[in-house]
Image (tube, rainbow, N blue to C red; front, side, top):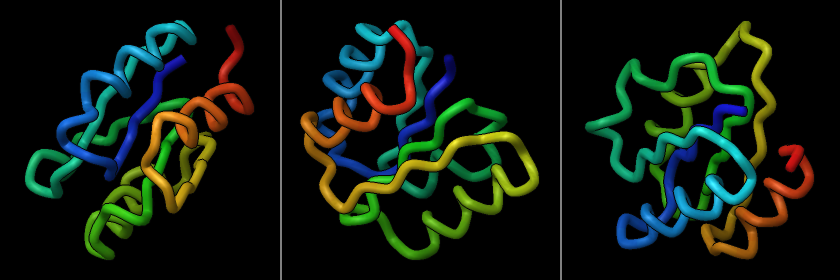
Length: 93
């Protein structure tokens, strides 16, 4: 399963990837808008940490997966617990 995480804390990127690896997911993490433009691709799951992202990032991520078969999960919190809950709901171990 492929997962794209948009938003979140820059210092927690490695922890996000490690947690996703426990769920056998390939992961890309974009905490800044500069690196994300046009690179969202076609993931199985798009995780949006809305509390730590700009409106422009949100619109860019949503337009990148528009019309594709991507599950979108939104969380205001960008904690490891929030990501774990999302992965337990949407990812199969």
